Length: 246
Image (cartoon, rainbow, N blue to C red; front, side, top):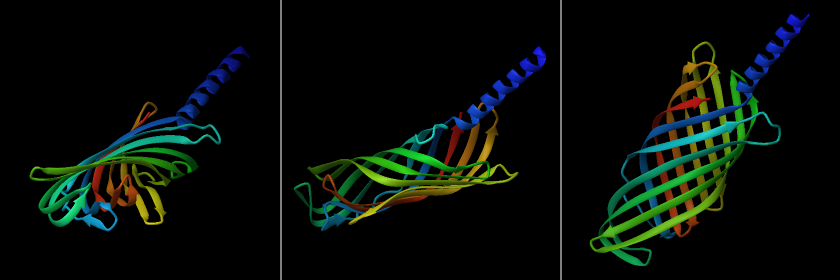
């Protein structure tokens, strides 16, 4: 009888441990993103310029924690960098009270951190669907230079966005198809950040899972007056990355 009780207890402990590994999860991921940049910006809605922004490789990474507690959302923190430069010829263009005529160069540095709270509305080995809300914390530094003249605009602010994610597993292949996005549209502001791609389960065991990812990502920033920043910018291109699940 004692042996039966001991075996039952050990089985219960192992079962609980397996469930905890399934229900609790820490995810860490990152990607290298080859962006094509296009669009215009300025410090006035009626005065924006196209600076022929250069295509650059950008970086992005995130960490997410998921748990089984009801009503309490999961949390994800992601950081993306969009840094580029460019040059163009301008005529009577004003930026931060400096007037430009002729060849003007720019450095455009944008970083944003996403704080996302989300719920898993559906989750199994075949399909998972998440919905939530994101606070996108922008930090922008833009500099225009022409000879000895220069001007700078620093813009920052938190913008609320909707969040959605879905993942579909392809049985017996190790491959998954996924899509993820943040969206906002009101008045003259239109922002989206979406990515679609495939992932491959390189390592899968009780200790750690490692997935390789490949896909396409696009960001649109139609901003109406964020600390004087007005923009109609697009960043898009392919990415490659990895996700580790502990």
